[in-house]
Image (tube, rainbow, N blue to C red; front, side, top):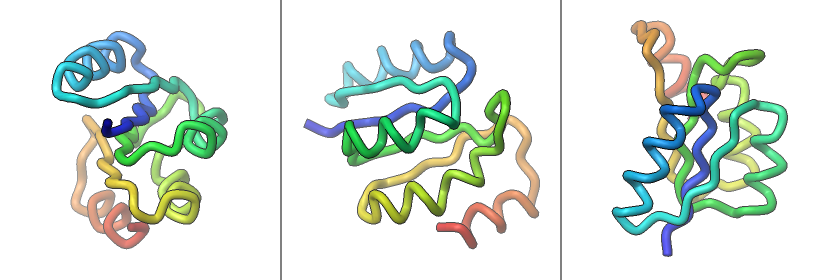
Amino acid sequence: MKRLLIVEDDQALASILSRRLTRHGFECRLIHDASDALLQAREFRPSHILLDMKLAEANGLGLIVPLRNLLPNAILVLLTGYASIATAVEAIRLG
């Protein structure tokens, strides 16, 4: 089974994503803050990660490199409602 770690501070959106993606064959785990993301990634070992760029107390961009180092083969998708060209370039640069 595919494992998906959802790092999203909007709990309602995270729940909707989890329910929907569970129906598509993912085992989902929800994390609502950046401080728990690496710990849960280490424990859960997801094959896929949905990462919110704007977390309540942190910027999701700061988690890309540590997540990539921990799980180099995981598929990582950065979610944001605050898109800009500069942000997209930075996210790609970080992996």
